[in-house]
Amino acid sequence: MAVITTKNIIPISRARARLTELADDVSKTGNEKVFTKNGESYVALITAEQLDEFHRFKEAEHLSMLESLVEAADDIEAGRVYAWDEFKPRLARLRVKAKRIAGA
Image 1 (cartoon, one colour):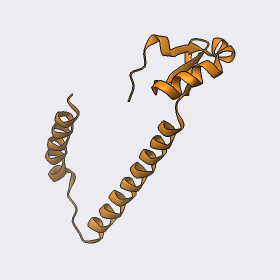
Image 2: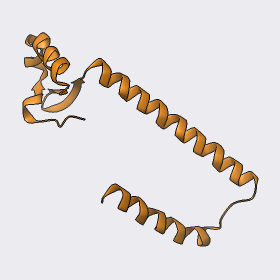
Image 3: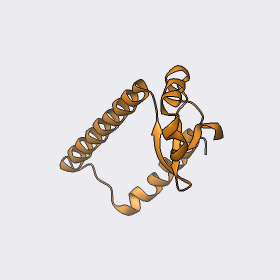
């Protein structure tokens, strides 16, 4: 993923006049452009490949969440559940592990 730099943040009023040029730059470099409106992020210009990748990621994320829900329902049905007092220390360990993985 490319890093967004200040040169890739463009007011939409300026982008209108330079859209073909900006699209060519994104296509060649893969560097996304962020268009602003009234000083706030508004829309982004990315390659079609980047958009496809985003959609694949979102679909995989959705499927993973559904699989987790099915697994959780199976656990509940099978009686594999914890009381809050049992689960609380386990949750704390999971949070520590997640932070370590995320590099926080």
